[in-house]
Image 1: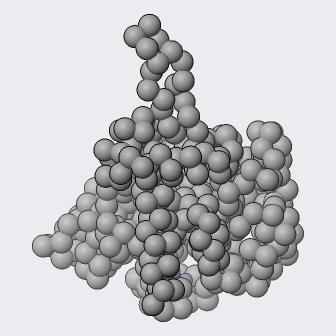
Image 2 (image 1 turned 180 degrees about the vertical axis):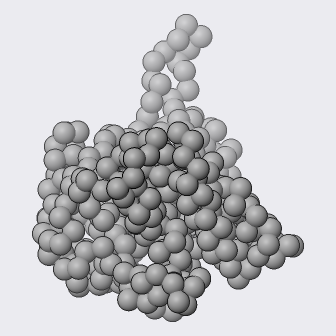
Length: 412
Ligand SMILES: [Zn+2]
């Protein structure tokens, strides 16, 4: 009985501290008085907590200067110089890394090319070296890292922090990302799938800050869905939910990288568009010179540029893609009834060309009583931001900075 009372008290303390952090993150800096009003906590609690949080260098005093009318009230804010969040993203042919302070201001980003055929550990090493370079450029020592978020496509065991499989990287198998990153950086690392991260990116930094039920559909060389239900990520029984790209829209269709036929990814992704661009531009003199990828092939972007320059064949391909995407999104709407679906990634930039066909498909196939709002992400890279979002959730929702509480201690 005594024990449970002690735990309740510790939990209450944690929740009060998290409330202070939340208010400061959303609207700091502010005076202790304003903080008291916004959190509803007592004056004694506020002053005691602020002192503890200042000792921990989680919050800092600002605006100390005196004015002619007397001393200005001292503002309190999150300390944006003492702790940072590192995010790493492994894409098909690149790694990207980003560092932000705990208020969510991005301090720097770095991208490096990788060889997709390299062993998983080599690719991970590239990601870590790129991150170390980024931290060095921004003069942030490892000891200042509050946490690291890591994301990749494929199959991920987020509890163990292991990347099991990646369709883009044939030699990426059972990579113990969390243990290797934690060993190198000496900071807690959290590993999650790219689709979940895209949803977290929208939830923390994008168009879904006020949404409790929404879907995020990143469309790059692959396509997947991040599902948020009642404000929380839905992972499924085996943590495999979200493989939207491998839902079938034509059983006799194109062969997919997963070995099955007719997956939507073969009709909607950047990879599918690049294949069609190759066919379209092969041996033909067209009005527009196609943009080429590093291998000299016209990529999906070439279609977009050609359509923009008035190439009707290119525009038709994008339109067909819009119809397929519309069918896929209609299925998601019919099953999950989200408030909105946010599409992102390179392919979403061509939305002016595929949107009308997408809307027609929604009109035909989506349940008429359901919301059918499709938004285009405002974020440059919601997946990478979402990797940082994992750490934001750990800090501001789960209390990562108050480790002693989680280990059973009660000093904070
Ligand atoms: Zn497939």
